[in-house]
Image (cartoon, rainbow, N blue to C red; front, side, top):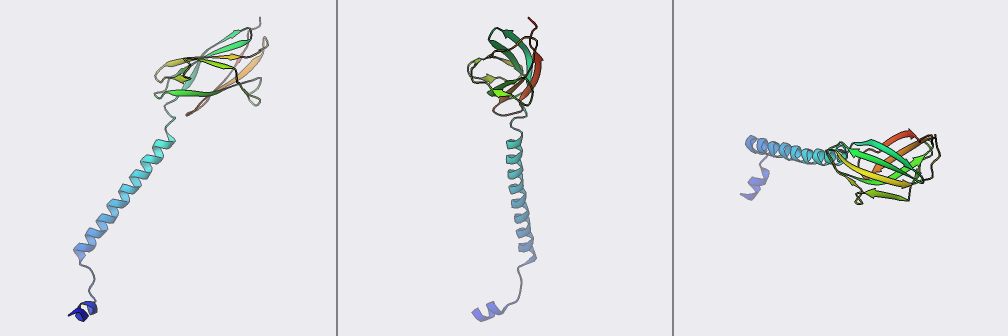
Amino acid sequence: MLKKLFRSKKAISPILATLLLIVIAVSAIVITYAWVTTFLTGTTGGAGVILNKDNVFWATGNITIYVRNTGTSDAEIDAVYIGTSSTNLAKQTSVTYNPTSKIVYGNGGTIAITVTYSWNVDTTYHFKVAPKIGAALEFSTKSPSS
């Protein structure tokens, strides 16, 4: 009886083959969906951060930059750069933030960034405000003439 079973050259039934193909297709779809969802979440995490310059105030020995986040996600400011051209920006180390958490809340939140910086009158300065996640805000503005 055992020999007869092993000598049988029959394949699996068409019903079992169809069910096996359905299971393989569904599992492939689930795996692809999970991968695409993870990929898109990782690459669009910073898309909700949109930083805009509100205003720049110049005082003797410091510059105060007001930044507004018009995006939907909160942004934490990571670094501030200032220079006389867009190619020679220097990271500033003497920076204070209000609020001190460095977070600019989404949907119109603002932050005041005060940088201790010796600036010259009537000079164009370039700025870069870089959040931890999302696009940096880059702009240039001219210091007052007196």
